[in-house]
Image 1 (cartoon, rainbow, N blue to C red):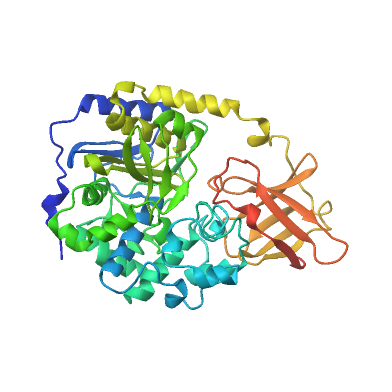
Image 2 (cartoon, rainbow, N blue to C red):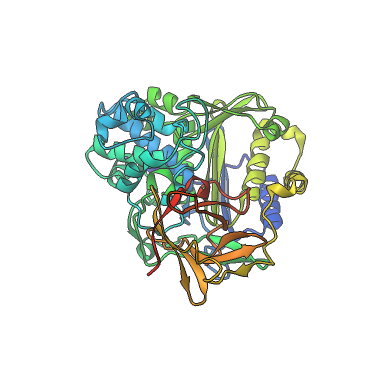
Length: 511
């Protein structure tokens, strides 16, 4: 079934304080020098504000429009769980089914966890995997890891805590969830997403899998900040390839479709309730795993409880119940937030490095609904984040690497060779051109030059978009192979750069 397009209601009603919302967006763009943004606000079930600004590629002159595609990153997770909910409604899947019912080859590090892992456990970030565990098989893209590789590799990733005992965000199990959907639905994940989610909801421009950039058109590219400018990074070629990470964070949508998606949750039509039943909607957005409430959330939002559902976060904010998710990929940030009891919410997507911008804009837009009397604007929250950064101890910040020196082959001769990690696979630490180079076999962008900083070694990645750099600690025990352990230079670096979970052992020598 195709739901009537009039449900998208893309034309804003004349009820919002448009000038105030414009000031919020303008202030965010100015404070954080954003290359491009698309914003939409819903009140009482109606779209009351849309705004686009900036360019798809900085300096190109190609303006962001409501039809510009952005990477929605981890906002893809809610689409994956909606697909699973469809399969539950169709009787093809149950939330309490063991994962091995659909994927007999699935193994976690602990055999008991393998036997007891339910489909629902894939979705709540409480599996025992360390935060971001194994994400180096997903990012940086492109790489050669398949979904089958990920399912096989999970058995080698050591748990960071006991099963179902706490919340630690992961991405790999959403990739597994996509494969569960494929097994239960009898078609590849991408086919099911288009057939069971995009088509019935009329999400006409959302893309997953392989597609043609020029045929689809109007695609925002990610950016990073360099020397005070927004610089495009990892720009798309003519053909967008299918990616392993799609169920966890690989879908792209435009503002118009994201507002359709949001209104489907806030004010579902009879046809949309036929698409996904109330019991499944309630299950997806119900608390399933508690999340610790940070001091900042208590102070800013008067939050008492926070939890994760299936692909959604939720908390009380100023006495209102909020359901939301964010999306983060290199050079792309997004947020979708719902206030179900008020049939209100907002969505925005940014094509630049914008972690603080997302935090600030999300907070100010949320206060538009939950605490308009506070009158704290973009500057207040941005200044508060800046002050927090200043208060961090030196040990919590990246070291100054300006004194780094490339390491010569003779200095590192005792440690060069071919290393292997059980899940990331092989990496070479070998002389080349008078230096020592690190290169991961299945992840070509994990390549860089080994440097010395004081008495420690680290790898400085070749590409600016691969971040952060990684410490390298070699050890040769009295017996056994030489080992290599790694860690982020910047303790605040993205948890998906999970170098700390690698367990390299030398298995051979350089050619």
